Length: 411
Ligand code: 8OZ
Image (cartoon, rainbow, N blue to C red; front, side, top):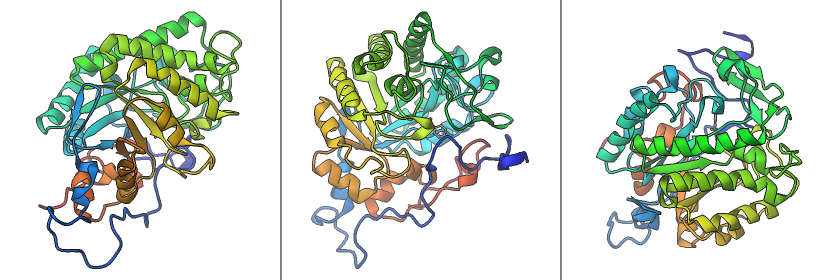
C-alpha cells in the first residue's frame, strides 16, 4: 500500500480528501421513522401514523418525467468504470437494485475527457460509453424506475494523470485548490490549473450539450447538470475560485454566465422538461468559497426560472456534513424563488423528509448515503425498517463487493 493509506484498484479507498467533512455519518447514525415504543395496529388504511401514508410515497412528475414516488437517489461516485470510462456490467445490477427510487440520479459522469478528476469515473460522451450505459437505463426502466445522468466537469479538481496528454486541469482562474486528487496511483496534490480562454469556454458549453444528447441516446430520461460541490460550474459561480476580469468574472451576473450558458445549451439539446440542475450554495467541498452566497444564488435561481427546468436539486449545507454550516443561509427563500420542482438533499431522515414534503418545503427528497447499503431504501422507509450502514472501505474503487452485494430485506 502506498503512503497515506491509499489502496489501488482491486482494493479500496476509504474517504476522498477533497471533501471535508467526509461523506459518511458515524456508524451510530440512524434514520428514525417514529418515536420508540409500541407500534400502532399495522393497518395501512386507517393508521394515520403509518410511514406508508406519507406523501413521500405519492407519485409525482418532474418536467416530462413521471415518478412513482418523491424519493430520489442522489448522485454517488463509486469509481468502478472500466477502460474508456465505460460503465461495467456490474453497474447494471447496482442501479437496477435501486430502481424503486422515484428518480435515480446517476453518479457524476464526465462530459468530455478533460472533465475527469477522479480515477475510474464514467463518461457519457463516446459511443462506447453510451453502449455501456444503455443496459443500465433499460434495467432501471424494466423495473419501473426513472434515471437521469448527472453531467459533470470537474474543472480544477483534477490532476494531469487524469487528463488527455497529461495536460493541466482547466478552471475559471489559475488558482490552486486545497486538497488532493484521487488518481489511479494514489492521492496527489491538485496542481495549479490553467485558466480557460473564452473560446474554450464555448467548447465546454458545447460538451455539456453533446453529453446531454448522448445521455438521451443511452436511454436516460434526462440529465442533471452538476453545478455543485466545487466543480467547474461552481468554480465559475463563486468568487473564491473565479478572479476573471472578462464577461465570465467579477459581478454576480458575470459569474453566473457560464452556468446559464450551460443550462441554455443543454435545454436546447434535450428539452428543459428533461433537464435538472444541482447546486450547493454554501458547501466548502473541494475548497469552494464565496464572500456573499445569498445574492449570488438568489440571482442564479431567478435567472433559471426562464428555462422551466424539470427540477432544481439543492445540497442544503455542507455536502455530506452539517446542514447549518452557514446558519443564516435561507434555503426556503431559494425554494420559494424557484418556480419548479425542488429536490432537497443533505442528511434527511424519514421524519425530516416527510415534514419537508408536507409543509411544502420540498417536492422530492434525495437520499445519498442511505442508498449505498439499502438498495430497498424506499421499502425500508415505508415500513420503518432499520437501515444498514455502508462499509467505508468499499465506497470508491473495486468490484461488486460493497457495491451490488448489499441485500434487500427478505420479503
Ligand atoms: C465523492 C467522491 C468523489 C466525487 C461530488 C462527484 O462531490 C462528487 C464526488 C463525491 O459531487
